[in-house]
Image (cartoon, rainbow over the protein chains, first blue to last red):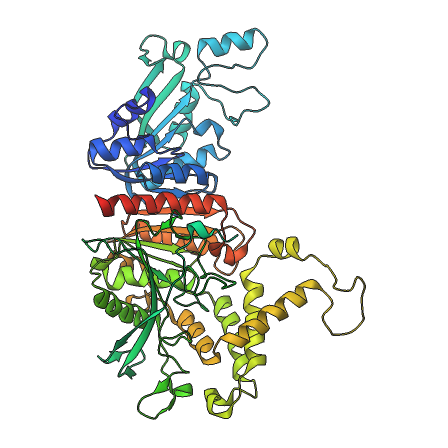
Length: 200
Length: 380
């Protein structure tokens, strides 16, 4: 199933950022689609981490090495600078310890790739103006059942990085599989960041 | 419970006799020995589909199937091993073995020492996990198995799987380490010693040479098993099954059996003392205590595991407090640090340490998915 050659567009963008033969840690890896693709196309080695045992099973079915674990308690299983890339795809907004996980990612990895739904997207703003919490393709929940607790916009995430001595290496903003260059914080629904620790 | 259509059916134990001396960790030497084992399924032409199942503390070679059609109980892991089951005997050739020091057909304290014509008794040497692994490697040679598709074990069995991957890296493709630990904690050793003291202080133990005295240290064995049993279950699991249920409906204000849990533990203890050997219990708990693959490497388990080339699956159970998930995570952490391939599942279960013998759904799914992976490699 996951052994298809096409990746979801957002995962493909992440995959493009991953160097061949590198070591990758995919946090909140779900069914392992990203790692499965990376294993086959870029000879990447690594592990997925997921809280849900059923996702671990799906990873095994996809030939991916997955480790069941709770990101909220940190990444104690992993030594410093063990990985080239640590990926956190559309999960950071659902975490309690948002700042801690960001710092942990750059403890265990040289680079981190973080993606999240951009709360500043105009449709979200529009729904708020109309008096409702936003519900959209990238935010498919009602306010009362959402796992998402820490919303941010591009500037907020970048400020958190700066506070922790983290440098933004690359930023891409997308909307329905198209890259947005003009007014990204207004027109982009999904944000992608490649970040690393500030040297020194 | 017994789904006979998915059973390996009627099975028979076999014996392999070895007359090349086996040098043990303790420096003692076993001049000759035999191992009792069972096999299920068919070894393929490439001899690449063999799986070794290592047993836990009170285990043996009878993993699956029955000895006779009217046998009440099947092998100890019958729900996991059989046609169409996660350890699928349609695809794998499965070997169960009774460890050295055991009391189910392999050479152990109740066997006759050929040098004296008497049971070994107290003179049977202490055996360790590496000793077992070495003896099992000889059995593999005998069966023509150069490399195991997988070695699987729970608890003490998981320790053997881990040791195999370190001592014979080229002979293990996958190691499945379930409800186990990289070494025992002080608390674990403490439990083991209480169990041993129960046996050692039983007046019928006679220093281990009770066989000739026509005695069996039943009371000690019974207590050891009752204690063990408590630690293998979880408080919740026990509460669910027994609660504070009384046998007669009201307090009797005495020391006879009143609560259902007392009745259950005594029954288990009695049953155990009927079929298990006291010296074997001492030896197996000692093997647990001594297990420490990093001992000669400055406690560096990562260095120990560096030698392994197997891929690993580690699983633990949330309510297991004898070998808690934290202990399994130590193994996972070391495997990751040693740059090994590893899958880890932490299974939600109320069954405590015994959960590795049960059929919690995510556990079965994980085993099935992982072993499918193993099987695909075998046929590829």
